Image (cartoon, rainbow, N blue to C red; front, side, top):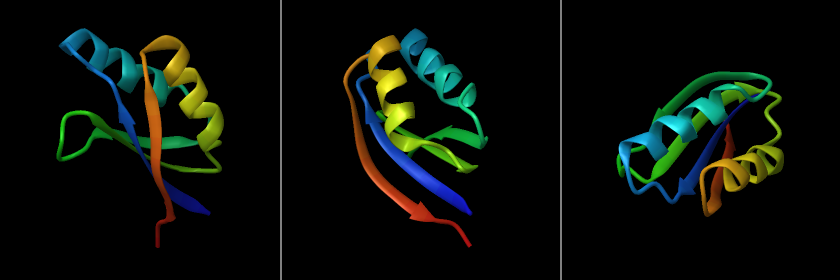
Length: 74
């Protein structure tokens, strides 16, 4: 089941943005990673992505991360 995960990540510079996208892309099952309409949101689409594990790794490597939504993609 594909799902769309939206997270709010504290990113203060371009290096932080690229690091957040890189960490999200390395997660298992991810097929799409992008920045949301607002620059502090990261959108991840994938099959079988573990959202809490992804949030934990982003907190560890980038900064404060908050899970906003997890929804199924048709």
